[in-house]
Image 1 (spheres, helix red, strand yellow):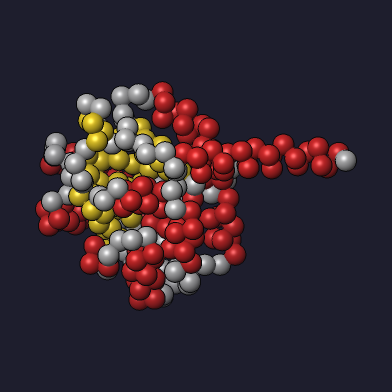
Image 2 (tube, rainbow, N blue to C red):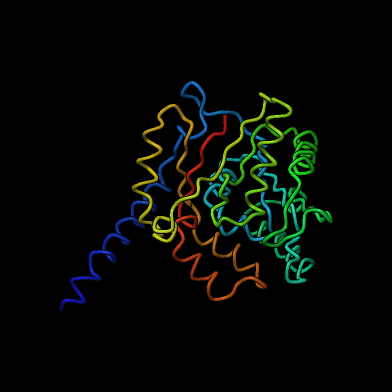
Length: 258
């Protein structure tokens, strides 16, 4: 009986939170990414990630939100994830995952530069990153960038370098025509609280009524699972557990970089 009393409240909270997300996913949020109260035009958006599977593990709520509204989403992956010698396999897996996420393969670019190799302790040159990202902005008339924040969700050095590469670009070029948004990293309790984090995420977004923070719920959960499953070389038990428990599977909170 005591065990039932202990586990029942967390289970109930999980279910209520999941229902909240499902309800929110069916409400048309015109307030997201708006200007003067009106929905913005269709955007050319560049999602900048470090490795194949970053898009499926961390950014699917954002991707699903944007593609379902007709925005043109480009993905720039700055390595082929060759830390274990599976780079060519992971490259194909990324293309397959993006198809599952309704992003055409021709809108996905992967970089295999000798100075941008996957791995802990691999320091990436921020100037080089800024140059590559700027080339993509020019080639595809990008007006919005979405990427990691300075912790990179998991603390991976490659994720963090991607953030600093984007910031380097902003600092050097002083571009005012491109909005930049970062995915907010949370503490370990929030990170593994699954849908329960929706309450705090919504609260923080409400505190920023000026539109500098956006809370996006996952409108196509099954699509996210299908995308992650395409990364079969990475689809081991602990990543399956991560996808089930991670709040990033259920929602993304984005903050505008000024």
